[in-house]
Image (cartoon, rainbow, N blue to C red; front, side, top):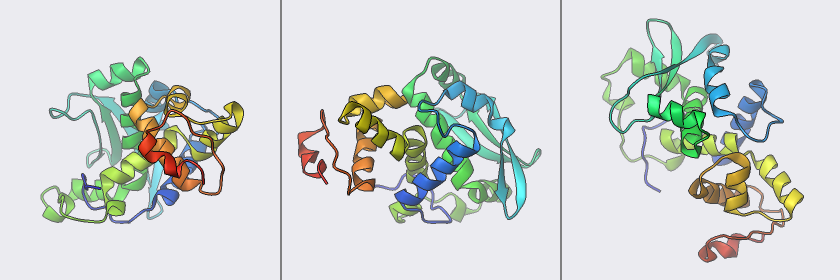
Length: 219
């Protein structure tokens, strides 16, 4: 895997991120809700706080134009002492129309808020410190973008909910996961791979998957 982000202060394995994402779902009252309503999640972010060294930091949200190619961002604001999550107007409109990429983008930024609070604060306090903005070689489990993607996948399609879907319909496929949880086909296929890795003792029936991956289907 190729690292895409900065080096996180804390390495995190996928199983740990799964637990954190599920805890976040419970905190915001979505533990029993299978499909995430993106706009509702986004516009209720200002009801949340995160704890950093026993200090509460409020979350806020907004819509603004960002640098070219950037769909969303999370950043610490020195003036308000809040962590702000911004979507571009285009991303927000896509979220309103139930676009899977926009939902994943929002969940990814929520991952940064939850997993990388200290990094966001440090970057705001020391914006020109090279060590906070490097993309040097580091382990994938320390990569902020990998961690954000892992959080988003676990948050949108929790492991237990995916396994419950399997038990209900008798199989799993990227199509079923995509339609049930609001992921793109590509993201759903990757999430299916995650599920097979995270539930190695479950006997799962998998259909509609890349034949080159079939060896991992039954475990």
